Each structure stands twice: as structure tokens, then as C-alpha cells.
Length: 121
Image (cartoon, rainbow, N blue to C red; front, side):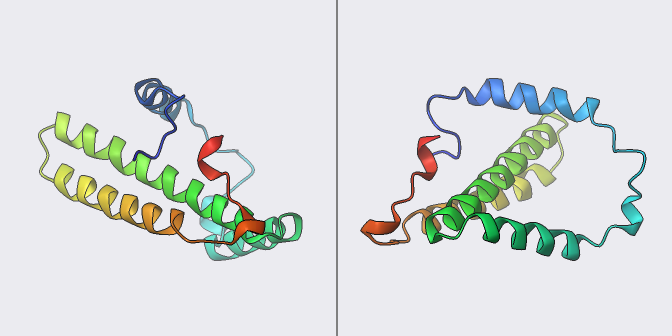
């Protein structure tokens, strides 16, 4: 099993993501030192739960986050490997741990009324 559905080219996704990183420019009005990440995550989480109340939606969000985190670790591992850095093994190992977490969560049964279509989009 992979983090990326079969209908999406992993190579194309990696190319897009790598190219997008160089273009990223933080908003000028946001001072990252003033942002409390825990507060920002909590506010986002509360907002999500107000709009999406089913366990399947929370599961889908968690799987999406794990997928993104796994893909990011994979990209960093590949880049480190290309540079000949030993850290590539740690990045790849962590990606495998994230993959295991994804697989475990994906197997969580929410019951027939809470069907999760996480991997279908």
C-alpha cells in the first residue's frame, strides 16, 4: 500500500511539491515568531470538528495528515540520499513508521454507518 492513490502519479506529485517549495514565500503580515503553533492547531481542529462531526471525517483527516507527513519524509530521504547523506536512512525509517501508523489507523473499524472513503479521492 502507498500513501498516494494509484490514480495519481507519485513522480508527478513529487515534482510538483519539490518545485513548489522554491516558490514558497511566507505572507508578509505574518510573523512566524508570534504564531503559537499549538493555538493554531487547536483553532483549526475546533473549526474542523464544528463542520465535520462524524468519526469517518476525523479518520479521513488523520489519514490525510499521515499521508502528507509520510510523503514529506520520503522526499527528504530521497534528497538526502542524492546528496550522499547518512541521514537519508533515518528519514526513510521514519517514513516507514508513519506508513505503519497510516496502515493501523486505516484498519480501524468505524462500523457500517461510519464508512470511510479516505483512499477513494
